[in-house]
Image (cartoon, rainbow, N blue to C red; front, top):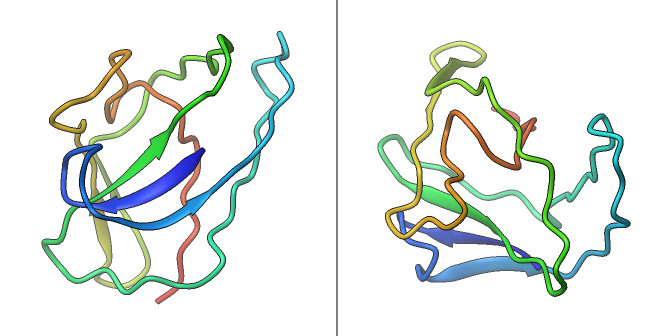
Length: 104
């Protein structure tokens, strides 16, 4: 299950969720796109958390080299941090989300 919650806790209020299936692979270049079904307005200074939960023993590839902040278009800037109650040591520098798509 993939879900988007408000705040910095995996236990925050869920505003979107989607079941997905993923075939375990040894190819670290395989990326599963999970798209939201509607846009969400993100206010400046707001925290949102993206949470992945695998229903079997499969674990995603552990990415690394992530950035704590990323400039976007115009005055848009994203700042990333780990969830307060993170599991499996996923945070801004290592984890499961290689790309983030947005529009202004």
